[in-house]
Length: 414
Image (cartoon, rainbow, N blue to C red; front, side, top):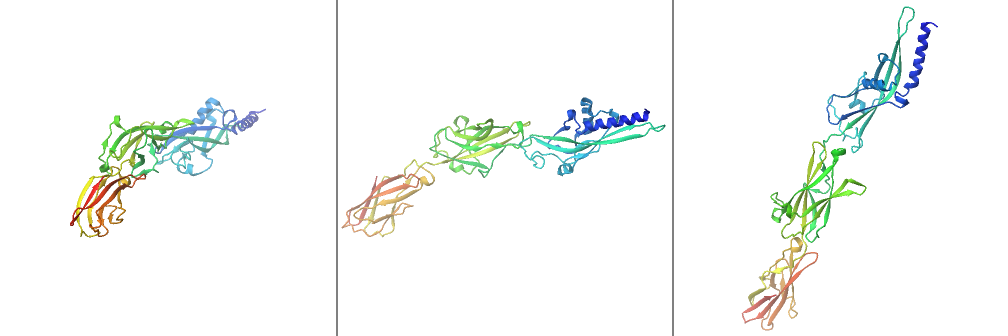
């Protein structure tokens, strides 16, 4: 057998061997995958990976291409063109995978990473051309014979997370930059309101959030819309912060509990501002602040009280009707509707409707002329009633007496 025939047989055997092992370019016949990683927010141009160098280095270990290294020639191109290859990846023929000039990867971009709360693995299909060349001696000529064995390989690029997001509190309950929750002053110690937990768009430790109640400020009615509030010392604070953890995942915080630890008194403090700090576990750490305004709702615990328990007034017989001759006044230590007072009278059965009262002002007027010769006295019960859900009232007596022919005397007595 001539040398020429031996070389032809060698080429045929080698070709069959490469075809039998090269359908899946990988060890043990499994698809060959190259894995790379790059941090988000890095601006291009950035080298992601050298495919040629990595394929050749792996071949030294696994020897899946049964050829001398000087006879291996690799060429790369996209197996298919899509929006990923058009914008965010460049591939050179010699196997350099590059982040293009001016571009950057953002894990929150759903085109790249459809599920930002999971690892972001971009899968690329790349055409690998394996070109083998041999020198064949024919007489005095030594021609070079080359043959290509095309393969499809998979390249995955892990876009790793960077701590570029601070925790954010949900805003559906937000009002003018503050969360507003209501506590009644009658609420018992241990009462609580749930505050939504903060969210962090990062991943892993970067998304781990740690909470701390920072400060409390007391707000009086005069300072309700003023930033000049009184800092409450730690020893006299009204609330503590508890975490609501998921029953099936103790590391997951579903919400925060603002728990009352001290009795509230609406007459002293109308509202309390609570600051909650949320800090993530990244490096460097990022944090945000939630401001909670606790409005203390008044409980109708006080009855109206008349300023004076006894009133004396003289009226002439000719005093005109529907003219105010006396104004009674009561006060209520409650606030809002619980402290709004309405006045009324329970008339004397002998002279019904002879005296009327303005329910808002407490002004008393005669509704008819009274004949002092026939009426010796008039006694009325004046009521002050608040407008709370559970009303409270206080009464005083009004006594009209015939003192002489010129004057009537009204006596108000509790």
